[in-house]
Image 1 (tube, rainbow, N blue to C red):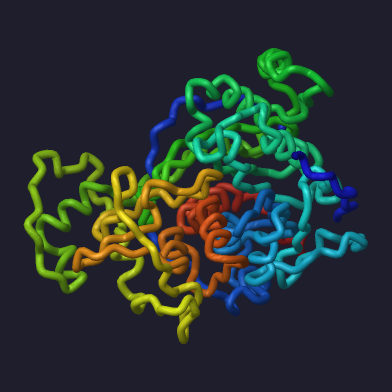
Image 2 (image 1 turned 90 degrees about the horizontal axis):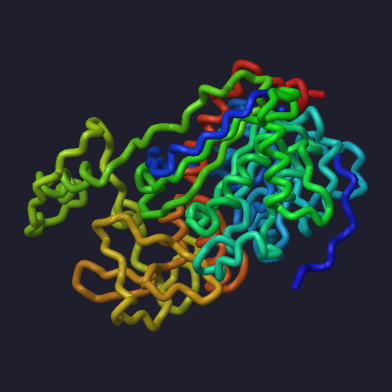
Length: 449
């Protein structure tokens, strides 16, 4: 059922260069994000270090991409999320509710200004000219196997709302993340349509117009140069988070667009920094085991251990991510100095439900409507026993900082993590966007006004 739409809050581009080639990519160092004031007054802390620009965060969920943008130096002028538990998580860490009666919503605040509610109820027009980046993990359920993959017929398809936000706020850049299911052959024509609409978002879809008819109009419009302030150079890349230092195999699609008048058509996605072959070499030569003070096991040698991309750091493993954590507490309660780190009973192993290996990146953390049947939250310990991973261990795999609190019962916490963007991966992308925008940064003037 489509939620009832709330009243709209009265808040507050060049040449067509769609890139349809880089489908298989690789994603930066896992360095765990710092924790400014345990999330309190996070924005003022970030701004005091460096200011990368002003941002609007849509589909914020549990805050992975929002925190990554914050760590990259962006100051959120608005974060929006529909689900109440996610909003509770955001409030626990870095957000505070934005008063809809505020007539200057663009003014910087010490905490992220949050609107809990349907994105379709927000008016973004008062942010026009004040925003550098609109970012968000567009809801993945319409395109994922776990979400029954209904695609463009799913009322959770919120790409149209991202386009509306772009038309109203006119950001200099856009960054969106989604599951790789969008690249499935059955969805590929629609995905290419999404990229064309992002390239020319002001060629608005008519009410009740079929998307294929709109796509035909977009193709015609993009044959001409158009107004460079209303067109975007759009690029996308399918990335594996493990290639960027995240201790998890996680394939996702990133879309980045720069307004055409900025002259950034030559921008490229960050190169991979980590590799599987480097991990295998470290395990073969014993350096990995020495690092963890473990006896070197018998490891089968592969002939193709060399990687053409020399100089890359090894993949991070589940052991790398969790080795310094104490054993989980029994009794389902937190222990001194650690949150969300207690044992959960009942872990089992059976065909199709196998545990994680400590010495490999973790399996993809999932949050499907039918549960997670593949053993993604089970781990085999050194002695051979298996147990469920704690919420904190899964948060480590998603590279959230240890101070990050998640609202709700364990299942809801896991769902938020499974839907999130790994912080370290999001930060790599956000820092690259910030670097590209830096020569023409005007956000300091906006935020100071």
